[in-house]
Length: 409
Image (cartoon, rainbow, N blue to C red):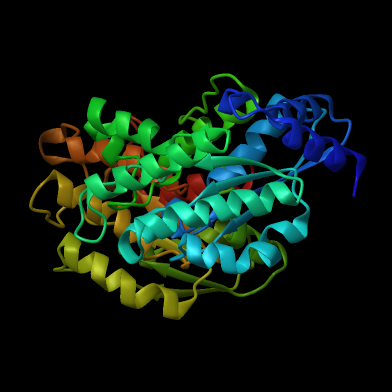
């Protein structure tokens, strides 16, 4: 056992029951080592699909990766390794079954534990309490400190009623207090946002229970606040990095490129790509959407995209595609993109074209839906092609210029 882990384990054994949960000696030591960089600190984030990397956050990162990046920025000398041990559909029962091979095998110094949403749907609150205690006990016996996280707040569904999720969150708080475990109260954090700013809350959720990347920033802030012992804010206005990473990697290797494009981009996307990368070998697959409303387009995406395994998807939902209300517009905008991504880690690029690139709004006045698209797309960690105010270029010119800037940031 490394000297650092011996110190952590010794501090855990000395931790008095009445100690304030957010400031255990082990956590203070972890904080000190992260800041100094004297040793590597290994952090395992243990949980379900909210922890894992799935299409809900764009398939590249979730709150564990945001925590990793934030700690690297805040502590340049630090050496922090973050392992994402989240798996879709898992309960605390599943977690206990894989804790050795997915968590303890990494010899972590810190384990964040966030289960509960599937326990609500599949399990029993008494089992949830018992299993949380077992998970904390096993982690600490292996020399790791634990941050116990409440499940995030949700919207009402039959399988996960708001009141029941709140009850499971209270169990996690009780276990944390009983065992003197630092607590990251994700349920309270997102729940407060849900009550105080319903639209921001809605635009932070991919569906009724899963946060999108914007929501994951709030989860990361909550956990980072416990790790760092102070409030941490992660901005939402940073540009989406490397929106064409898969496309450019193939082009740079002169490999064939398969592009699925909604009109009118099916007519000129190959030409535009060749203008930026001469000699590109592009196979263009049209995605016909004429006559489809947003709900039908969302369903079409679910059946069309993943079987094709494209390299690039160009989403250009027609301005005329109807939705019955604002909620349906938000939901379909998110899910047309979600269904166009690979299920887990991202395997291809998806870019969204703002309707302003193709057609002006009626009366030349920007609509609320136009503004919503600009808020939704970055929250899904996707690139958006938009038209600058006053720009009278054709859609092909706007698209080509965007490709060129993405290839040469």
